[in-house]
Every structure is written in C-alpha cells, then in structure tokens.
Figure: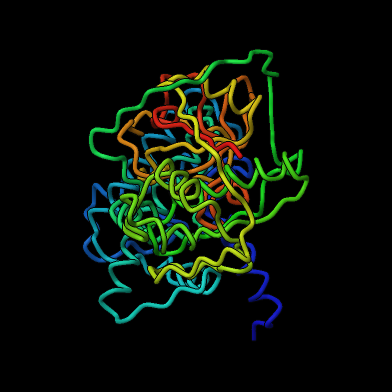
Length: 401
C-alpha cells in the first residue's frame, strides 16, 4: 500500500511536474515503457494505423535524442504537434492522466457540483495541460522567455477568467489628461518590495474587484512612504461604498474612481477593520478605523512606458490596466511574459511595483490579486519597452496623500 507520506509528497510535487516533463525527457534522453507512442504498449482502439506510425516515430525520436540538436529540435516540435492534435481529436479524457487529475484536484482543493461539470473541467484541464507541455518544450529550445505551469486555474478557460477574475471597467469616453512631469534619474532596476512598501499578495476570488486591489496597493505604498507604517487597506470598503462613482463592486470598476471616492470620503478603512468578503455588501465605512486618506491622484500619459518607469522609480507603485485573459497569462509561472496574442484591450487592474531586466529582456514587476499560487508567488514579470505590451501603460495612475 502507498503511505500517506508518499501521497502527500506526490501532491506537493504535482503542480510543477507537467511544467518540467518535456525538458526532463530531453535531458534524460528516454521515454519509459507506457509513454504515449511507446510501441511496446497496445494502441487504443480506434487509433488509425497512420496515427500509430506517427506515435511510434515520435517515441523513437524521444528515446534516441539524448541531447537536442537543431534537426532533432524541429523534429521534436513536429512530433509534439502531432501528439497534441491526436489527443485533441480523440475528444475523450485520457485515462493515463486519471491519477494526475485526481492529484491536481486534491492539491488545489477542487470540487465540482456534478459529473457533467467535472467532465467539462477535465476537458479544459487537458487542453491547458497540452498547452503547458508544448510551450515549455519550446521554452527549453529557446523559443520563449517564460514558462507556464498547471496552477489552480488549470481547469479554466479564457472566458472563465474574464468573467470571474478580472473586472476592470474603463469609463466610457474616458478623457485622460495627464499633468505628470518626469523627474528623471530613474535607476536601471527598482523593486518596492525591497523597501517594505508592498503588502502581501491578496486573492480577489470570484469577484471582479481587481480595480480595488490595484487602487489600495498604490495607496498602501504612499502611506508607508509618509508614515513609515505598512498597513493593508480595505478593498471591501471600495467594493461596497464607491458605486456612486460608477464602480460596480464585484461587477467591475476603475482605479481613478476608487481614488476619487477616497478623496471625497476623506479616508478608507484598514483591511483588518473592514475585511474582504469577495461579494457585494452594504457600505460599512467607519471613520474611527480610518487607515489612510488621499488628496489627489495623477494619471500618466497614455501608453507612455518611459513615463511609467519614471513614476515607478520616483513616486512608488503605480496602478495599471492590462489584458489578462490569454491562457499563457493565467498559467504563467516564471520568466518574462511576452505573448504576441496579448491585446491592448485592457480588462484587469494590477499594480506595477518595480521593473528590471532578466536575460537581456526588460520587464515590469507586477503584483496580481489572484493569490500566491498564481505566477511567481503572486507576481508576474511582463515585457517592458515592447510596444506597450498588453496595454500596461495605457491607463496608469497613482494617488497622493
């Protein structure tokens, strides 16, 4: 029998397993009996002869390739494409993944309402798994600057993420007039976490309150710089109380509207006194537990990454809007995110807390509000100086005390 410790170790290791499976196969130089395409394993019923030949050919290449060469690299990519296509055409859950599906569900506490929902989520999970495997193979061959992983959003589609985990609403006809003046002297790299100006990563849950977390994150840093105290501010305060300013609570909102509410309200409560509930509620603001105020906010010039760098360097973390609905975004694990499919149609509010360069690729250091299981401990490095990638500099703003 398997011990409880063995099962626990499997669960802990699983989130990173599939992200490494292909690079590890290349390094070890061999497939094991039972791998997909292994000619020693009886093919599934319904697998056409030409499919079997393709699988055997791919298996042989995997076994024989002990160190990838340019020719083998292209051959491996073609074979992976064949495998991905074949699995997709089959249209049924892959029984060889049953144990991994169960481990992944347990690792992330997944439970589904009924069998039909689980079947749908399983299909999405397998599709995302294929994306992660192929992408990470390409990363190991030098084709990408970032890696993916099967995190807690591995059973979600782009539509799911857009509906449940974003929530940015750019005001209709938003007239962005910037009065920002650059100060200059920005260093080559900046990380406000190192200066103690960034609170822990939060999780907005199934509530479109990204805008609220982005806004409080920017204000938290200004409070720290002025008072020396780092205090988590109440995103729920903004969700419940700023609807008169055009925000819709869990239905979405915009950071500058949140700042304007705090200005007019002459304050915002602390997270401790007004905890996050991930749902709309009645306004419970209490002036006696006020933790911060705001006197004004500043919008940066539209799509100006140089101005954004200057502000992050000289002012502090900046609220920004991005496109966050690509599967490569929500399955991101490490590296510098750079996907040409990422649009400038923004839908998610996040916080830029720094910038730098990794492997000769400039990046923005971005704090998300999807919990620490997302990305690199809740953060993502996004491509910088690359034509306003994902619209990151389109709607940038910060508050002042």
